[in-house]
Length: 170
Image (tube, rainbow, N blue to C red):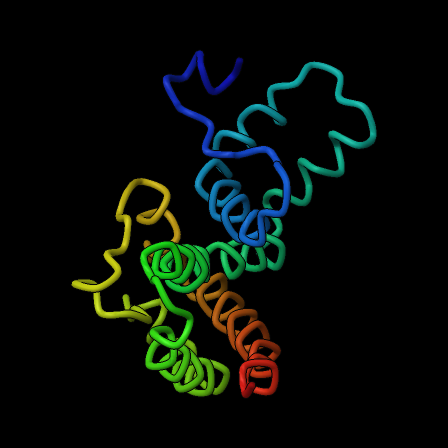
């Protein structure tokens, strides 16, 4: 209701079936809606303990950076890859794209700053990026502390995704 009253559409989606991308997509949506969530929670007349804790968390830079760091791969990696697989007839056609993913994950696990500056995984002629308000919120300058924390979180994420290479060998 709060979003509706403020003319904002909720970008959050429900978990339906086996949606591998839900955590990344909803993280991007939470980061996009963070100011509305803050506004709602701080205006609540008598919040219970849970709402009080969520209100503290939604302004904490470490948590915001973590949510942002999960949202960025949605825009750059997981959603574009999902769209790519939907348009691919044979799994072997994905090999050049998987190789590109491996190379980018290796680079981004050591230095993810190019992501914060607008780097993309796939050629946008092949897999266009959906640039909207949610995308813009993730890639706007957020201040030194949040930028640094987001970069560190992204490097941890991509370092863990390097295990992808072992699973994709076959």
